[in-house]
Amino acid sequence: MTQGVVILGATGSIGASTLDVIERHPQRFHVEAVTAQTSVEALLDICARHRPKLAVIGDEGLAIALREGLRASGLPTEAAAGAAALAHAATLPGAPIVVAAIVGAAGLVPTLAAARAGKRLLLANKEAVVCAGALLTDAVRAGGATLLPVDSEHNAIHQCLAGARQLERDVRRLILTASGGPFRQQLDLSAVTPEQACAHPNWVMGRKISVDSATLMNKGLEVIEASRLFGFDAERIAVVVHPQSVIHSMVEFGDGSVVAQLGTPDMRTPIAYALGWPDRIESGSATLDFTQLGALSFEAPDLTRFPCLALAYRALQAGPAACIVLNAANEIAVEAFLERRLPFVAIAAVIEETLGRLAPAAPQSVDEVLAIDGAARRAAAQAAATLGIR
Ligand code: NAD
Ligand code: MG
Image (cartoon, protein in one colour):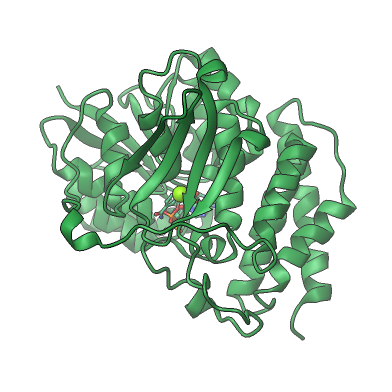
């Protein structure tokens, strides 16, 4: 019998890589359900190829387009729409595996639903961990779920920690590698365009995470993600810029040993690791040819040109509510930048301004997380309008 997989955010970059790995293992996996927010055509293409039981479109206005598209293609796939249907897809009894690949805090509720339902949760949606923090890890424990990180750095750390018995005692620090993004060597960032920011040197990704990689906020979110997933304070999580993206992250143990995970930059590797775990399955990624690699280099991140990383450390130290504010303000600022309403260098300014304006208490429930997220989005939209391009 094959294992059913639900892919939340199937039409995105992680969704495509996941489908590619699944196709290599027809005797092991089948696609049970897929979701997207607005891309009906792309979702229909996936349904035609993988014939899932259920397809969900987040935008309810597109429900009819999805249903009619499925009918016109003669597919047996059932259609559903809206936020509740997204969360329902995450709990389908026919699928023990859920891939959380929605971008942004929008993925929080379905990701939590999968955790509560005791799924093997393949987590790419870092914003959900940044916002939910302990609520997510508690839901994983209460639901009897297994959380496997797909984000390449956290997946690397998961691999490096295999066999470590007592993290608090045995590990000195986690070392996250960062490519440095497209502007690592560019001094003047005042005229950066969305096209330039989305042209990542090593990875092809969705637009939001591409901009985050260019500001180094992606690494900032990942520092918070690592803290939540592995239980380390900010002081024990280091970031080093490694432009080749061959070492995906490292763990330094108490005896001075540093264990690293290496590979070609291809998200199918961490996805295959998480799908197959504890087995190792074929991912389709290229072999790392050491004789062609040349030098691996390392440098400290420049926090003056990339203040977003420093802001993320500050939010982690301030507490869970500040992390939600940071993430929400970043989502608003990145959207404004992509729509050419905000200069690249003002992204950090919008986040800093929003963090300064709001100081909510730590959330005790998902509703409180969503309330803080909403308030931060409103404050950030005001800040973006003030600092934006007229
Ligand atoms: P993407 O933009 O390519 O795809 C996003 C997916 O989420 C799409 O299927 C889209 O339909 C869906 N979506 C968007 N907004 C939604 C909403 N409001 N409600 C429901 N669904 C919505 O993004 P991506 O690059 O695949 O990234 C997905 C997640 O994985 C992000 O959190 C990102 O940080 C993380 N991640 C991505 C990569 C990568 O290489 N792309 C690497 C590590 C982590
Ligand atoms: Mg990453």
